Image (cartoon, rainbow, N blue to C red; front, side):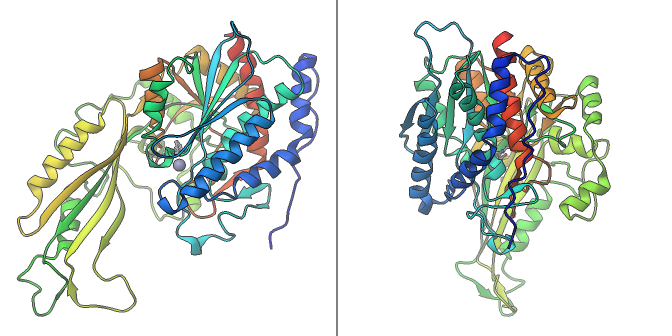
Amino acid sequence: MLSIQRGVNLAKHPPSRLNARMQSVLDYIEDNQSRFVDDLSEYLRFPSISAQPEHKKDIAACSKWIAGKCKEIGLKTEVCKTSGQPIVVARTPRKKNSRKPHYLVYGHYDVQPPDPLELWKTPPFKPQIANGNIYARGSTDNKGQHMAHLKAVEAYLKTGTDLPCDITFIIEGEEEVGSSNLTPFVQKRKKDFKCEGVVVSDTGMPSPKHPAVTYALRGVMALEVRLDGPARDLHSGVFGGSIENPAMALCQLMAKCRNDRGKVLVPGFYDDVEKLTKYEREQMAKVPHSDRAYLKMLGSPKIFGEPGYSATEQRSARPTFEINGLTSGYQGEGSKTIVPSYASCKITIRLVPNQKPQTILRQVKAHLKKVCPPSVKITIEGGHEGDPYLVAPKSDQVQAGLSALKKAFGHEAIVMREGGSIPIVNDFKKILGADTLLLGLALPDDNLHSPNEKFSLEQYRKGMIMSAHLWQGLGAS
Ligand code: BES
Ligand code: ZN
């Protein structure tokens, strides 16, 4: 049984150089930590798994619950239906002709499937607190991270402190499956969402001593490949050798897509890749990294990747071709001597600026069709996609982010790229003309998308403090 520990640091912030109003916001944050943790814990009980249709009701209940929390603190809140999952929109109260800068805060209440369940030490939707962390699916990705912003806004509203910015929260339920209904929704509400910028905490930082603003994300192109062979599974002794084995053919096909050092072999794949600048490579070298500690944390035997790039560069600034799941033949206990009738795999390709998902899909399809042997029938289906994202690492908004992070974490903040994807940020740019400020609170060992996902309660608390300072900085810039 894990011990319940509410031991967050309740020390008050020294009043030096903080005006009294800001002080009351920060005090409110400290004084309400235990309730804030309880709220997060309640939020984490919803199995809001967007990839699995049987959780539609849980998703709806989760969207209502978070909308209720927004209403409770005085936000004008709507739960908007879409042809997929509902989107929660919640605005701070504002004067009719407000001249304050308007910012969106984007987050997602949907989560990844928790499988494999047997690897969880405690059930994924029964949040447990241990060693200063809260363990549950969605704790860091992304419920805890956007809730930190909601709590900071609550602190302003409940202490009657003037918020320097008008803020609209957009909390969606389909980020983990590509955000396809959010794009038309943003388009439809373009006028309401006109803003100076978007704030997103859905990425990470290398450590609490190295808080970071992320200025680039990788894009993504998902696809599924299926090879069909014989009409049914066949006896491998009677027929094997005369009939192609689709599982073998799929392995051979995949080996023609990526070499053993991670280089993608699809013709034209690297044509649009923007070269890293000297400044960027210098910044990336500042991201703390030890191969040994990294391998230990991930339980992997050796660092992998193309020659000439560091692990930090590989995982954030280089494109990849990954198999996410492989299916074929007999998977049960013992052996079964068959030639399976088909083999399939799920693939995602991570893209870097300026690669385009549709161009890449075309190139990959053409390559697969060309190298696929005639002894199987190939079917390729494109899935969700998202463009890579890149903003100027030296903008005023980035400066405001760096400064808020430094105030909250007590350490100089760095700029860095990240390897994950948040597809909607490009649409915010295209539709609203707004840049996104990525202020990630996840730590490298938070197990995003893995068993035993957690969120550090210190990161949660400091995230709120960061958010409180951020509105001052953005309001002034
Ligand atoms: N929070 C992640 C994205 C992320 C994590 C970015 C860490 C940078 C660092 C987000 O919830 C996510 O998982 N996105 C998906 C998007 C995909 C389904 C289109 C991803 O990156 O796999
Ligand atoms: Zn995720």
